Image (cartoon, rainbow, N blue to C red):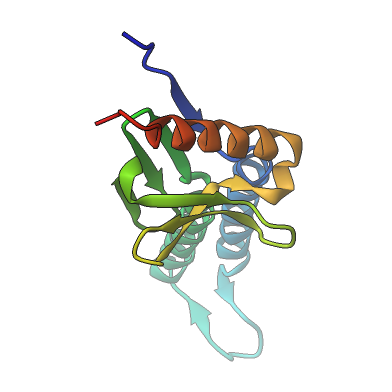
Length: 152
């Protein structure tokens, strides 16, 4: 029985950037909330504690939105490929995948399906260079193994 080879790929650079950027964004919103205390000058308006809390809440939402970009992941084995993008995902058997494409100039890998549809695989990003190339090669070898004659 052949070994059940499995591959899991997550982007590297964008995850590092997001894990640094999210706290910075939140800190900026908290600093802004603190700066909104009291009057803005010459009776132009007064910021209430609820305004400060709302500004911190907006900071939490913005930081969460930044962290969504750490979500992409692809897991594949000899039978199927599971893709999790920033929003949404796919779980596809290899039989519906025609090709694994990672063309020059594209920001991430794509799968060409048998029905001529194209699925983005945001977990394999061009910014990761050699790591992304290795991931694309691993996915191509799993696709080739799945399409071998005699496999069911």
